Every structure is written in C-alpha cells, then in structure tokens.
Image 1 (cartoon, rainbow, N blue to C red):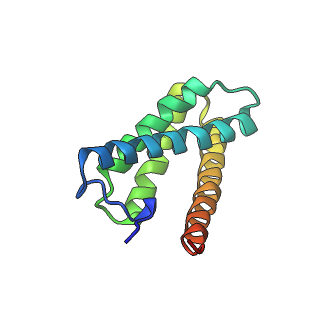
Image 2: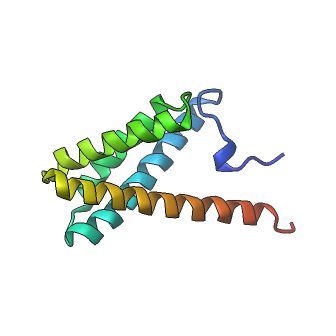
Length: 124
C-alpha cells in the first residue's frame, strides 16, 4: 500500500516523518508567502518569507489534532502577526499580504493535492 504525503500522520510516525512533514510545510509556506509578498509589495526578500514560513510550520504541527476551522483561524491570525512583525508593515498592507498568501497557499495546495491524486491513478 502506497501512502500519499497527505495521508501521513507525523505524530504516529517516526521522527523522520515528523521532520519531513515540518520541512515540507516550512518550504511550502515560505514559497507561497514569497510569491504573495512579491505580488503585493513588489520587492520582498526570501529570507523574511522563510522566517514566517517556519513560524507557520511550527504552528501547523502543534495544531494538527484540532478541527480544521480552528487551525485555519489560528494560522491566519498568526500569519498576519508574523507578516506584520517580520516585514514591518502597516495593518492594511499586512492584511493584503496575508490574504494574498492565503489565496496562493490554497491554490498551490489544491494543485499539489490534485497532482498527487492524479499520479496515484497512473498505470505502473
């Protein structure tokens, strides 16, 4: 039986699964924030996106046992606070970057999920 990355539960798995899930989440959040920040702000350094991405990955790992609505609400609020602190933006600019980040992350997440699902149906 082959498991997709979306089916892995790092809490029940090995330390390697836990670290791998954390790294994938941090990279995903960092890249999607970098795209969103570049779109809204014009010029945004990747290093700042990595800091926020790591914060969001830690939060996602700590909140994984809660309901999706709680996780989304907490990570959106944490995303806004981290963006505001790291990028030193006003709340209006922070809101624009956070909404753009959420949008890019949802679109990228759905695309990756569908790609993995499609590849699982491919003949071997």
